[in-house]
Length: 304
Picture 1: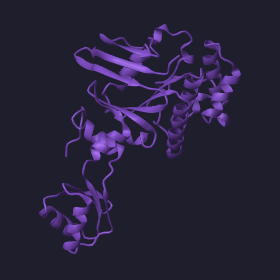
Picture 2: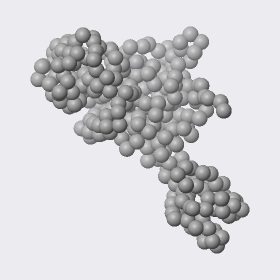
Picture 3: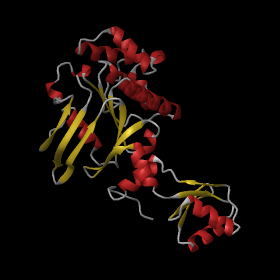
């Protein structure tokens, strides 16, 4: 089966609320695609539609060219983690996975393989009800992998993970994509996908805002800005502003300069005898890109 997800023109309402407003994007094999947007943007609803758990008024969602409900032995085609808490707390993790495996004609050997893959070997015989949220996330990933599927859909898999767990999850997702799988990972925080996602679909209010490679997105958001490190920020702002630049503080003693190239900044600081330790082309973070793209799509925002 081809490892792709194709979402086309999804429209859905919950009463008067428009949840999906023409949602369209694709997920290709061989890399992690980040699916990001503010809470309430439509991420979970879209994933539920892809997995046949919610109906739409218009549009289609296909896995390998077919709707989910037409798949025989679906765990062999697509693995999903939508809710890490959706398990029987009285069962051990291993028994939870054995029950799922039996429903799909999979073996106990496969259960033990995914337990090791998910890093649960030492706690597999503990009752899942005593698991932390991070451990439940790992168990959910193990369940998604049971059928060795070419497509994976994970909704907020970083929730509840400690810093070591976040690093593990990033590396694990990259490994799965490196095996040629199509991996769709939703998050409301772009920073969680830093160094993992090669492609990103940014949504807001049920629509796609951006559908591009991470490299192209960062280049577009970085623009012509320059990062400046100086021990005399007030003098630097005065000299550069006089030359027509826009200068903003960006934390940790750094200034971000817009409207002038790096060479021009160096020349102006030199002429004004303003000390500095570094001038470099600004490279936006995924978090900056996300905040800029979704500024107008956040439904509830704190006021100052």
